[in-house]
Each structure stands twice: as structure tokens, then as C-alpha cells.
Length: 243
Image 1 (tube, rainbow, N blue to C red):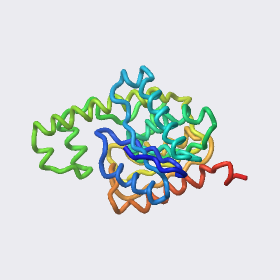
Image 2: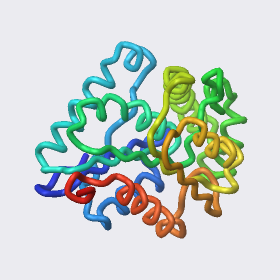
Image 3: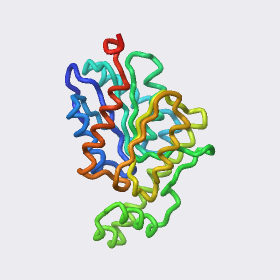
Image 4: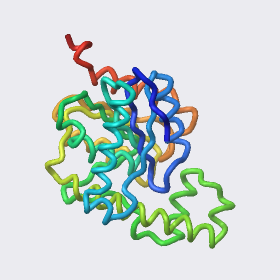
């Protein structure tokens, strides 16, 4: 977790299922390049943690404390895959007091269908999860180790169950004023059309950027991610900029 620095706006980063990874690191780097403090926070650690409201309460409080401590004039909520659902879920709670404008950037995050469903690993077998991970460049030697694969798959299924509930709880009425989406053209598990579907939930500006690559971003996509973040900042204007 990053310490905040006085006078800097805040970018709150949420990881994909499994936590961490190259995409999260690229997001943190992009925030730093744009003069933002990057604050990385976890998704809810279980369905009861989400359903009880504990995760939302403590996360919103931590974000507000960080923004106050750093003198942030605006906040960007950004997340990869499951982390994007966390960002969208928290937006109304943070925006309710009107203290700061809030922007949202999601990366390879599926929009829930009208029934609240998303592509999910929660019911996939270990071999099926291995196939998804292999396509995204996960080290084959780890996937070939049955014990290691079982451990990885168990963790991903547990996180996916939380992602499923996040999607359900957004509901058909869960809408955003503005949203920026970045997605990989070759993501087989969450194809671009599932990311493009967020347009139905946005009442204002909707920006979709489709880049080469799969579910996880690599260094070649750093510039595209930086442009997407710059777009969020341009759309999330402070009172001084709007005057």
C-alpha cells in the first residue's frame, strides 16, 4: 500500500482475481506518471465480507482518509477485471457527499448482463482454469504442477465467487455518469463486447479503448493505459478547472 503525498490527487487501484500482476503494476506506474498518488486496496475477501457491508465501509473510509491526508482534489477509481467491479461498486458511496469529483477506469472488466451475470471462473475445473491462464501467458511450468495448479485454481474460484456477487449487486439500475474502459482485443474469457456493454449503464460520456493483447496488459500497452488515465482526468474536472 502506498503512502499519500501532500497536494496529489488520488488513484485507487483494485486488482484482478488472484491479486497483483503486471496490469496492476502498470496502473500504479501510470498513476505516478500523471502525478497521482497510487493507493492499492484489496477487493472484498469473501462473499460475507461483501454482503455484510464491512468491505465497502472500511474501503470507503480508507479512501477518504487518504484523500484528506494528501489534499486530493479528485479521485480516480481504477480496477482490473474483478477490481473494476469493485471500483464501479464503490463509486456511488464515494460520490454521495460531493466532496470531490470521482472518475472511474476499468480494464478488461465485464459488464453484468440484465440478470447480473458475468463470465466467471467460479464453476470451472482446474484444467479449465489452466486453459484460461495459459492463453493469457501464465507460466506453463506452474500450470503443469498439479498441486500448484490446484492452489491457484482454488484461490481464483474463491475470488470469482466474490466477483459474481459484486456483479449481481450492481443490479440493472447501477449506472454511472461517465466511464472509461480499456480492454484487450484477444481476451477470450472476457471479450471486448462484454466490456463495450458498459455503454448501456452510462448516462454521460463513455470511452472504450480496444488494444491488442489478452486479459492482462503487458508493457507494450503502457502508453494506451496512460492515455486512458489521462482521459479520465480530463473528464473529472475539479471546481477550479470547471470555473
